[in-house]
Amino acid sequence: MSEVEQVRRGRRPSIDPAALSLVAVELFERDGYDATSMDDVARAAGVSRRSLFRLFPTKSSLLWDGFEPYLSRLGELIVATEDEEPPFAAVERCLIGALPQDQDSRHGVRVRLRIVGSHPDLWSSGSPSIITARDLIVELLRRTTGDGPLELLVRAETAVTTAFTAMRLWAALETEEPIEAVIRRGMATLSSWGR
Image (cartoon, rainbow, N blue to C red; front, side, top):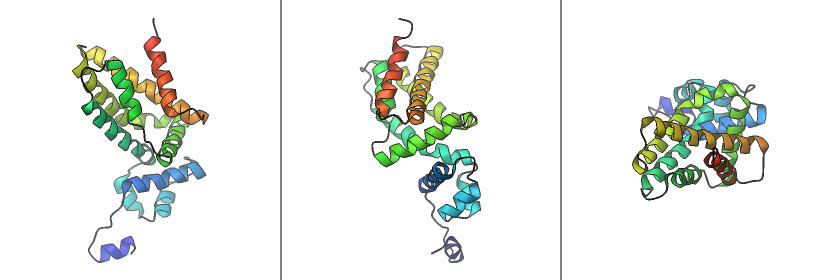
């Protein structure tokens, strides 16, 4: 039943935002981010332009939506973290543990990160996701350290930025090295700096 038929029958169509975002990412990968319009996405997903814009006001929001499951899992891991675990190890474990495990999801993350890495203007639209990750890490560090506000923010932002940088590099290089290993190398670089 089409969206129009459902509306005529008095039912608002149910649209899965994650599926819609995935359609967009597939188009971005196939045709290029710049060459793909919101109209192209709506057409490929079989939804109206209005429905698409109701859920995703910008093309960049389609791209960044795929990071929501990561943030959700990161929050769950942080809540479950024992306060006795060393803070740096806990942060690294949570940042890595929140990654998707299935290959399809990892491929989607790789495509999204590759696009973000090649379009620096998209970085700012991802700020809410990065800020959410930072705030989650701040809460973990607040529980497990005696740090003040400045130290909490510096450590949390540095850890999240390091992980995000490692993830973008993993995506850009198309390396066979697992994403977890690349993030661990980034975090090791961070932990050894200044020694």
